[in-house]
Length: 302
Image (cartoon, rainbow, N blue to C red):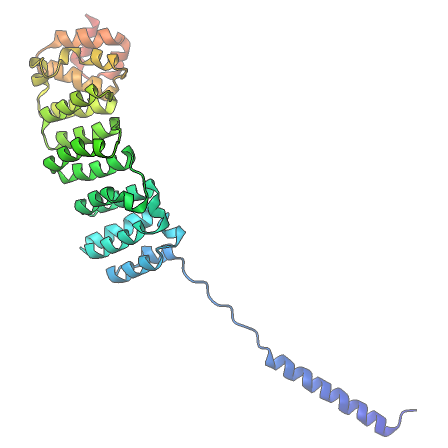
């Protein structure tokens, strides 16, 4: 039988244990969860202050989610250009060129184009010339990017120099896209004779024109009401052989080309030439379907 003293000791010990347990519970409070940090891309998109935007992008220079996101690059550069902070643009893009991604031609092409969109043509061209510093090989891809920036600057002398000297210097093979860039630039500057001569010159180099080449030239001549010039001056452009010459180089004329040439021939007062050349190079039903000019449809039924 338990004595009264033993019972008292038991209750005293139990109370002490309970008290110790409560203290332990109080000494380990529930930890508050740390809020998740907002993603860098979201921050970049929301930031409106040019300086803060610059610092935020610079701080994420090695963040792959940022540097591999084309929109983030273009949007940041565009907003900095709008704020006329070209110094920030230069610092950001030059920093990117020195990082490992600067060894990829595709990435350098992006830098060239971004400089071009910011109106910093000189920086874009220097980036092309300095590619060997980043151990990056030049091909027609980077050449065309630089050429496109020059074309946008409308500096005729610079375009000619770049086109004549760079391919040979760096052993770059031009392609049809190169030709189309220059032709489009000259057409937009309304130097139509030069645009056509570029096509002739490049075809001699073995670069074949495509539908875009012909459509760009014909559309430019059509806008300037110079289809008649093409028809009359056979030594510059044999307009009556246009469709056949396109087929001869393996180019299938598209709907735009058909419509431009057909309308041009009628405007120049050569309906018979339009009927003969167009309808000989394609079947009558196809021409009727493609052509929107009622005179041609009537001629087809004769």
